[in-house]
Amino acid sequence: MENKYKLKRIVIILIISIVIINSCCYIAKEYCWFCIPPGEGYSGYELIIPIRLYPAKDTFRVGDTIYIESVFSDSVYDRSTGRKFLIEDMDWRVGSLIYPIDVDTILATGYRNFQVIVPKEYDFEPFVYSSGEIGYYGTYNYDGSIYSLKFQLIPKAIGIYYFLFGINDLRFVKIEFKEKCSSAIVYVYATMNEGSDNNIHLFKESPNEYFRVQMFNRPEEEFYKAGGYCFVVVE
Image (cartoon, rainbow, N blue to C red):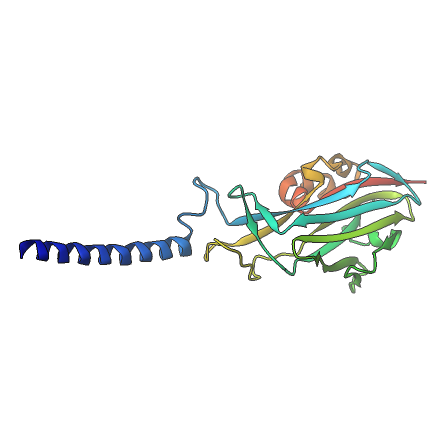
C-alpha cells in the first residue's frame, strides 16, 4: 500500500516537473535565454546579406561596365549567434543610392551619371525624389533555395562616387524563421565584397566635412554595414 502511494507521488511530481519545464522553455524562447550569445552588447539578430561589386578596383573609365550582384542561399548567416537560419521566400526589399562625394553637398544624385542595366527578370526600378535625388529599389528573385539580384552600371561622367546597396530597414518588419526568439529584433546588414576595404580612403578627397571626417567616426555603421563602395571615374 505504501509503495502504491509512493508511486502515485512520483507520477504527480513528474507531471508537475514536465509542466514547469515546458513553461520555462516557452519563457526562455520568448525572452531569448537559450538562443542569444552570452556577453554584453547583444541587441538582436544580425543577418548578413552578401553583395559583390566587380571588378573591385578604385578607378573606372567612362564607358566601363561595373557589375553588382547579390546572390545568397536561403540559409542566412546571423553574425550575432554565428549560426545560419533557413529563411524561405522572404520579400527582401533592397535599395541603392549613389552619392557624388567630390562636391560639397550630400545629395544622392549620382545615378544621373550612370547608365543602369537591369536584366528584365529582376524587379529593380528607379525612384526620383522631390529633392532631385535618385534611388533604385526592388526585391530579390527566389528560386526555392537561392535569392538573387543583378544589375550593371556604366559611368557617363567623371567624379568620385559613394555607392551603397543594401536591405531596407527591416527592424519593424515581421521576419519569421525556425528557432527565432520572439522578443529579439532582427537587423539585416549588407556586406560588400566579403568585408573588404572597398576604397573607404576616397572619402578623404571629399570637400564635404561629413564625408571627409564624420564617415571615419562610425565607418562600420555608416559604410560597411550599408554595403558601401567608393570609386573614381575618369575619362
